[in-house]
Image (cartoon, rainbow, N blue to C red):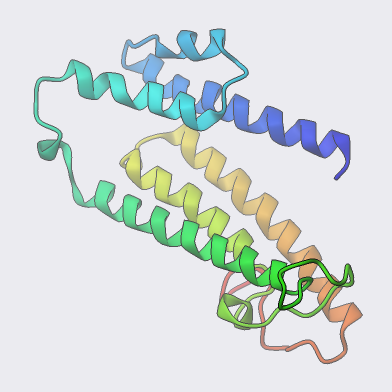
Amino acid sequence: MHLVQYMFGLGYYIMLGLTILCCDRMEKGLSWCFLCASMCIIPWFICFVVLMLPPFLLERSSLLSQLNWLLVAGFLLFIWASWLQHQSMVLLARLRTGKSGTVETLTHRVPKGGWFELVSCPHYFAELLIYISLSFVFRGLSFTWWLVVLYVLFNQALAGQLCHDLYISKYKSYPRHRRAFIPFVL
């Protein structure tokens, strides 16, 4: 991977946690983002935990009373999308490994099985679903987070379409019914 891509990804996830999640907390009068900003080398998910715990600790109501259908739906979608992404990556890894588990070839092959029967890049679709699930957890109220979801949609759709076009041009027997990114749509 190119160093610029690596640095962009690293910066993206750090700034995502520091900017998006902190921005919404600042509107509520909490300044937890300064804690995260002072430790800008921590991953965004640690910042997420630091930012999401204080309201639970500050409020006197029980955690159970704060559950609603959006939170449960977001949690379930997150778990399922994470599983889908993992399964897709396992299928991609198996394209290069043999029965012993060691890498036998570096050539590209047509992925088969799982959601690869519907789309060329189910792992990109799962990534989008993970971000959407987090917007459910935020109860859909974070405009800033919806902008992040929109960015991920465009980013993953472009990457998925480029990958799909490569598969079509490289493999004459590539299934024509497969979509690039979103099943039955794109």
